[in-house]
Image (cartoon, rainbow, N blue to C red; front, side):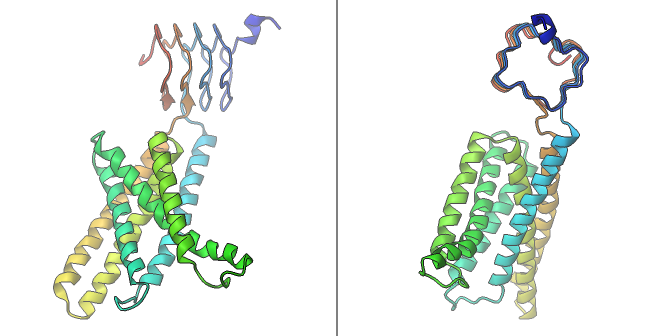
Length: 293
């Protein structure tokens, strides 16, 4: 096979192929379907991408939806069990500080994703999303750290297997919260964006539910002001839940399908290309022709 034949991909179905880091100088992709392809760090000087089709594939969409559902179920399990464990607790009980922490963490996570979904400001929305991700991560880390940490300690006979451990719960909250912060800062789009939006949707609903149950408790004891105030707050966060769900769908729909991240596209041709969900972050594109055409 000659060099020209090796670099000729014209009119081919190349969906979900990886060309990461490949030397493809002068390659011909004219008319090819390159949806789902990974060209990150590839050498594509003088490459021909005229009339190509970029974007997501069904496989990528299925993976993204699966990730969102899995994250939603994981967070829903943690949040629901934390909420039901907090119901009925009073300030006189030892666990009351954890109940207050639950209210605050849920409120921060829900408010953060709500602000991110509502605002179009490029400085506020990312910060709000990071805050929501950190709070959601801390909640999940706290729950699973407490539930599973005791199993590890039981192996060393430091604790019975049927108990939760506050130290491992706090450690889990710190580690997962910090991990979410780093992931959001390093990679604000992609899977992280989907994960944060899905987790935020669940926490927003969880906070709405918690406010609603607290409102009912206040109304049943004739504390009308707090009952009505918390009822309105519950409705507000139900609305923010819908906005967060819309943000999750948006994150999935606008996820990168084809990526040219950090690729060398000097003098590459893109005339007539159908460019959708395409990532050119960090790409070298001096003389790139046809982008936006």
